[in-house]
Length: 389
Picture (cartoon, one colour):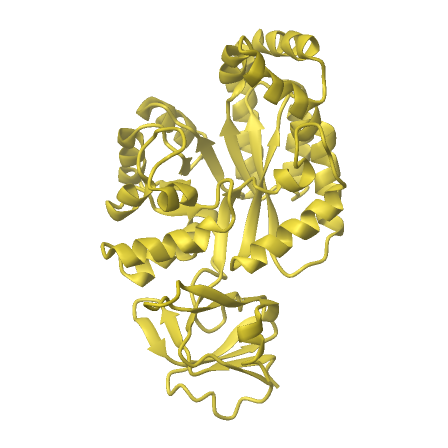
């Protein structure tokens, strides 16, 4: 007996575009793709997807919006288990079925400190939900005292993606501005003078950073998890991190860096809010233009989960990319970059991670009808519920 049968919909198949096929889901996987479109013979719950699109579930390799659930205002913290529950609800309501939570492990106390890191890992281990929640360790270069902790967590399988970050120089530069400094000190929960002294202290250890990054890269390679570098400023930066095993280039600061990364076969990830807004909030390159040029190969939620599926639809609507290529930026491409060969496309034997949506019309924008994660209806709106029997 199947768990769920979807009939009548236009299903996005790899290399074929939208096709009128029926899908039979069983045991958390896609058991059958019926190109006759009837799903005849399958027994189980039925979802009438007539007039709708059925697309692969969204995979988010870099999203740190969950930090706002942990600390909605600087210095105002809420229980991490509650934050994870609310984050999962947001993810599923936006079609995201696999989410790498971007957790910064910094020398800073508070939200990005080691105690929050440990609390979050414990809460994720205890959480039981539908979305596949994973940990994207955003390692701050100067956090050398926590190297042993990070290595141990990588070896134990509690980290699923390692990214190299270095925001300390920017923090030090901005500490002279009281308003900007308050952002960091309130987030950390310490007095400005204490924060400034700590920042100056860690900055003295710059010479130790390459060895620390090499240690973590070796641990990640041994564990078989993907590596990324964040905000590469130059092609030489990209080459150095690629030599450590980082084949994902996150948010390159110059187009030439992204182009060099793609030429070397690396994935280039950019933020989907950039696509929706038509520009980077930092004044960097247009993600839409770089995606259409083939430089940006992966879109992420960055700091706003709802942007991810909508950005793919915006790109498809612009006409330079067809739906398969545009949606692939948030499904097949991130799956390939992360080494997830069990999801990202709709095919027999793959995980039953699906998004059902009503395409845009002249009267209404596209809207999500249901999210299916691991074969389970994980989120459904009123319109979608009326089609489920």
